[in-house]
Length: 109
Length: 118
Image (tube, helix red, strand yellow):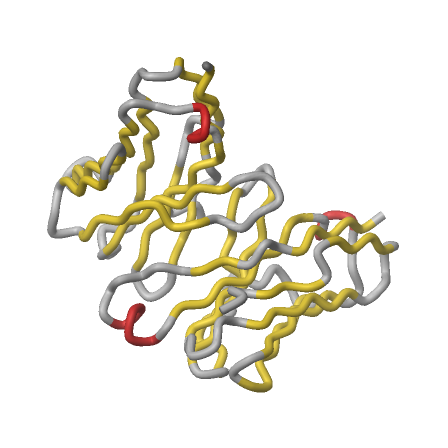
């Protein structure tokens, strides 16, 4: 069962613009949400997280927003850079950690 | 620390053969997770261990899959017999107990083992 869903398999943006990656979840018991970034031939690496008791967390160019009523979170990257091109996975934690299918972000120079 | 170490990085085998994937977690990490990445399903959780004990193996696809953690520094994922639909990248990840239990939640992943079953 896909408890964490990323419905956009790919996203392309221009360098300097905002990238918005979206994620939906079904289990209201998740207590933490995370974003991981993955480059080819490497494992995913942690990017940013947010507790379920918050609605926003910011770290430099990266901001995660959580809308619990809609069971939706998003990752904003501002400004986007070519080095941000990667696959981004949304993840949610209860007793274990569940991941979405990923969104491939391409930032064009 | 060298991070989470997985071997082999690439494995090509024929249908029906036994496949063993290996993982060495970061020293001191008490949680170990096995994930499988496919185009269709993304990153699927297969099984996870706490202090070498399997906690949840409900994600293991079928009886052909088995995982063990004989000690704190080593885990294996075995597929016997292998089938073409098992072709995927298999990731191992670990987390320290203090971090996980406190909610910090950060998993450190290995580079993955790419399995191709012909």
